[in-house]
Image (cartoon, rainbow, N blue to C red; front, side, top):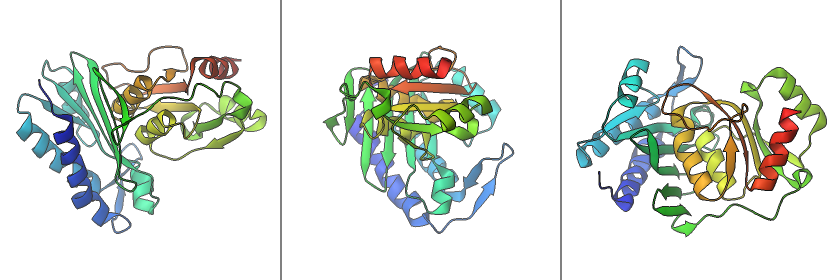
Length: 261
């Protein structure tokens, strides 16, 4: 399937400005069965992007966070190109009026990511990468920091909520890093790492729509990552995946070694 990156960016940007931003701080939220938050903005963005993407690329199909598990599994089992969408990554932030959320879109073909796009409409920052093009932020190349190799100088992005309690306690008590943050939108976390707005990352569980675009961009920018068990993060399945990541190989290996102690 031949895609036009500029056209896809325009679709996402326009939809975000018309469907998300007018609802920011004005929307009511509900809890889904798994306890996560959903708003009318999530559903409006999903419907808008599904309509426009499939109109431009009728041979493709959609896998979105707001679909049923049966629909999601059907998409992953398809031989068609798959748009893996999180229409509003960071819904809890969005509903609380916190300006840290994004639209995440990956294109999967034959079970692999071949394109990733993450758009932050608050900052009008578009992060992207394709299998044949480098990682970009608004058309400027992204390259992960190769200079910070001492973990004691690193800013760590850590989601404590989904980590096992023993690891969480050790991270809090020992703090091997210089400083710690938790922003609350996984796709954007990956991209901020690629942009060197953080140096190491740890997360207990992300779904395929959370990580597929952001991780692809991060690795294209030169970052290193694996699960807590040392496996590749991306799998063409619905199972949740943990994350250990660093912006360069030396920092990644020292961070992973500390976590495994």
